[in-house]
Length: 186
Image (cartoon, rainbow, N blue to C red):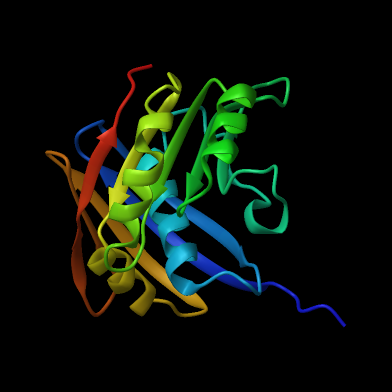
C-alpha cells in the first residue's frame, strides 16, 4: 500500500510592506511522504514571497509527486504556467525545461552546510544562460528554523519590509536570510 500525503492547514498572514500587499491566506498543503518539513516550509515561504504578485492564481502544484510540475505556480487564464516556482537544488536540465514552459521561473534554493554553495558552483554558469530564471538562496539556518515550526495546524505571519523577511508563529519570530544569486526583471 502506498503512503499518503500528510495534510497541513496553514493560516498565513502576509504583510508585504514593500509592495503594499496585505492578505490572509487559508492554505491546505499536502506534504508528500518523501518531502521533509524543511522543504514544505520553504514552499510556504515561497508562497508568502510571491503572494499577490498575480491575480490570486498562485497555487501549490504536484511538485515532488510529478517530475514535470513545479512546487508552486501561477497560471494564466488559458491554464499555461506564467510563473514556475521551484524549491531545493534541482538539476540544471529541470530548470532549463521549466524556462521553456513558463514565462518566468524562480528558484528558492536551500541546503545544509556547503551543499548549496557546491550546487551553485556546479550549476551557476549554466543557469546564468537562462534569461527567465531568478535564483534566491535561503540560508540553511533559516530553512531549519522554519522546519522547527511545523505542526499539523499552523498560524503564521510573514512580514516583508525593506527586503527583510520575518516569519512568526505564536511562540517565535525568525528573520529569514535570503540572498539573490541571479535575478531577472519582468
